[in-house]
Amino acid sequence: MNILFAVSEALPHVKTGGLADVAGHLPRTLAARGHQVELFLPLYREIRKNRLNLEEVARVEIPMGGEKLEGIVYRPTAGDPGLTSWFIGCDPFFDRPRLYGPPGGEYPDNGARFIFFCRAVLETVRKLGLAIDLYHAHDWQTGLIPVYLKTLYRDLGENSASLFTIHNLAYQGIQGKEIFPLTGLGWEEFTFEKLEYYDRLNLLKGGVVYADLLNTVSPTYSREILEPEFGCGLDPVLRHRADCLYGILNGVDYEEWNPATDPLISHRFKPGRMAGKRRCRETLLNELGLPNDPATPVVGMISRLVEQKGIELVLELLEKSYRFNCYFVILGTGEAKYEQALGDCALKFPDRIAFRPAYDNRLAHRIEAGADLFLMPSRYEPCGLNQMYSLRYGTIPVVRAVGGLNDSIDECEPQHNRGNGFKFIPYEALALAGKLEQALTMFRKKPHLWWKLRRRAMACDFSWSQSAGRYEELYETALKAKKTAAEKP
Image (cartoon, rainbow, N blue to C red):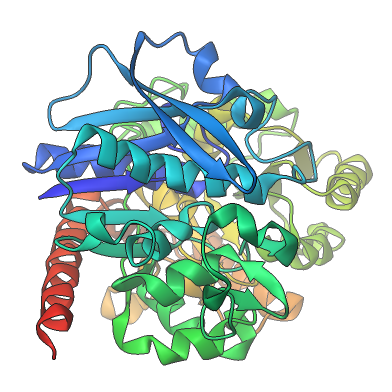
């Protein structure tokens, strides 16, 4: 198939979250499986800094209300077989210090920026005559692409299908209706069945309503968002399209996250040769200034410090850290109140808690390698990746049974030699504490069972090749659904 990916971020070019991992690895995997993939990104300042050898390919003119803006289309002079990266340049929109806004905020014209990007992608397809079978749009930033394929760019969508992937329903790109004219769409599209949302423009809703098929980044999350608790106000719309909604768990790049080859950790290891993990643990504790007691387990956490990630529950645990008799190692940045509270805990218990308020990929790898357990007590979690990284490093996850955490972690049942981690259900500090205590007890008192659990964890396979195969099936389903719909009288 000829597949077009439209995304707001992708590795190795730019990243703020898990979307970049998906958009970096899935297209490359699909190309390796014989497909032709066209990957479209805005040409941000950060991408320019990478000093790619880019050539200008075309210029497109995009109507934006009463004016027209020019988009300059670039591609690298050299690329991967089967994968072409396209960058849409427009300095007034994309030559900025950050992708989406200043720290803790958003650019006020984000709606206009990504309206422009969506139209520029489709104008490029039209101008260059690219033959596309499947348009794959991601999150609110590209939610208008399925809309346009059934309205202003119907000619591009006649013989193709669209898939819209929801990576995090909480971020919907809701805009004031005064910018609706920038879309170029007629006001008949601004209704509660379509793009209107409480008298505002909801860009993610556009993708949900207009795409031929929908999916989320885990099976459990695809079911959760049909209910009010996780539906973020769009659950009625999603229930209406439930027969078109699927869930595919994200994959992991085992070339980067592999303790047998990882260049960022102090000592390498693999099943059957685990001495390196013990050395990684020692290195981590020394680096963070914690005592090195071999009998005291290390509990790691790497997270954005936002309410979604269950930081309140973790803070309650840390206030009673001596009860657990373990070391807590936490890495992450986010809301100032959480950074302050975690910093205060580390000062209060300097021999038990280490906190680093930073985005540090090297330290992230060292925590995965050196910790014994890993916390992910999220309020909700569309997919999550760190629990899958942890499994490969023999670092046992303790997670809340939501979204992708529920799909990737199976409760440990030592009597049946099953499971790869520990799960709790109620969003309560008491439930998290109880499950962590259960894991710590096994670590301390039943080392033979812990050894078996760790081997099962390290044997888990969440490679992108498996996820890519499921996306191929979904693309075929989308094309068949489009064909069936076109044949109806």
